[in-house]
Image (tube, rainbow, N blue to C red; front, side, top):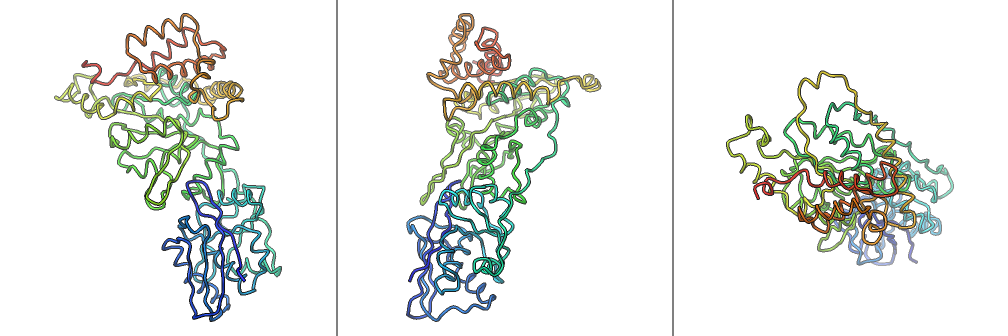
Length: 508
């Protein structure tokens, strides 16, 4: 008779149910695993056999066959060990079969039978809840999985401990969720002296999730400003925190089962590979754009990133998701992030300063900013020049607004958007609005419309640029608590869109 256990296989952030079938039949002694396992899964037979031996359980001298169904779904990772061991113990009548079948199990076995932590327990718990099953997992993963309160999570330190639980000898209390991680307070916006226009740009970007490009000479404060953006963003909602944490669980970034309500801030170096930024590599893991989901992706020294990497970002920026395609799998990851980029005007960095610029000016700037393609540049709603701060201003006391003051305005603007898009699933911020919905919420008054049409003709705005200006103007109106998009709102939105031109545009 065939014994069954259940586990999961990961496709992106989705954990797909896998049925583990174990048959012990007469024949030459053998232990085989079928069902498209990878090397780590195939090696499970040695880990399971040795772990059972350490528990003084001898396997029968028969043919043991384990099938992972559906057989056409690739199985990767060592987390199949626990389900294979449980199905085998049920097949030789050490564990009750009905009890084993009532749970989803995942965990790696060490040779002494201890359960080693694995990745993805949080999405596995989501799948277990949908299947109306309990979840068996390593003790170190229990606090993470227990955030899904609609399923019972049994976290054991070893296979022997789980066997005693299932046989009623020593029941294990259900795991409790970890603590909400209280990250250290982010850097405050009041630390930045001057740069009022750049601060205003950050406020608008935070309020409507508008992508922002800052250009300026080295040391003007671009990175400093970007590092303070999280301090004015509202905390993650419970649904957003769960969605973001599932991605971080797959990537192994959750510690001690804690879930943070702080929005993620990812700042990869410009030498990062395409797989590191977009996702892929061994196991098709999520990339930086997915780890920044519901948060901020900061690309410092934007022109230094390989052009192939930047152009790969164009579609995820528009769609909010990325598909990592490989020969045997297609992984889909969410990546709805706020893109903040910083760049020097040229390689030497001092294009606007004749006294410090290199001898290749203006060709230096033409070559450097020319690395950013036109379609990629068109996706930035806000473009701000960050001028250098005079050293005499650095001695003045900080008198700018604190992050808390700006955060209150951002929260109020986002609350207006939440109410506005309540009947439009999939649209959360103004940056998501498109089509007829955008026309309904962001059509400017006659003054603003005339100004926008004049700018479109004068500067040759693309359709994408035209709509992005409308979205930014809508956000500026929200910050002013205005129901209508007026001329001043359109004028300010235009000023951010048209301020920064590439050297190639200036030469033309």
